[in-house]
Image (cartoon, rainbow, N blue to C red; front, side, top):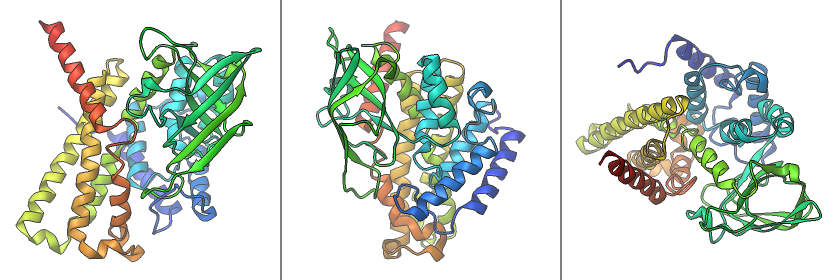
Length: 382
């Protein structure tokens, strides 16, 4: 089995690293800040990627993409995450909002949203979790009622990343009831500037702009805001989750951290070297499991089992490497030191990794999906 991605992918990786070396400050660690200096870097990176048709590599040309193969897109994701995602919150629109609109959107929705995403001018947030519906997303209660030809939205979302920066919200709402909890959910594409929307930041160890509460008070949207079929939003959400689980290449940043640790004096200790070797092995496993998920998705055969297994490997690796980097660096890691390169930001890496097993579906939910899929597979086999 040849696990290399090919000469075109290798050339793209070299090109991306050169571009990022040119555009990113030496102390770059996060794009999720309202600081004008930070957002200026994000804008510069996004505009340059769009200009060179690198922002939406695998999108079809008709939607503003370059029409390349999935492996070049995989390289793009890896290099962006390895360099602390300098596209900022754009990755959300690029990785799953745009692709899902391509799959189920109306011609009008595609015409409005896809050019804005592919050019990097639109920022999206995802309105899924609620105070009583996080891991159990099907229990969401934000209400959507049809009045005089318009949908009226009332309720609350929580843990909404980048809501303070976003112009659009990919919103899941309760528009009816059915025999199952998944029935009666509808997805709406909602302008964040709509009257009645209020964003309240949530302080967390992850830093600014990561988490917010969003309140919807009699927010009115037209029927053209509905994505997919009314009451069949769970079908749309499943598409989002499929793209989301394989759209974040956490392992690439972890591999970069491990490479930075390679020459550290603490690795002279056998116990530390043993843990380091284990992390290297887990990083390779996470990469290969993600490659399998990408290949299956491209072939139209990706299931919850393979997607969740790849995600499990990635999120556990994220926390393993962050903890290892903190242990090896010791007290020095608690004081940011731009002159120390990547190892000068170990504390930031550690804080960010704390959310890995919660965001985009908790680790418990991912394990449940794998177990449920395995049981169903055994039943079919018997």
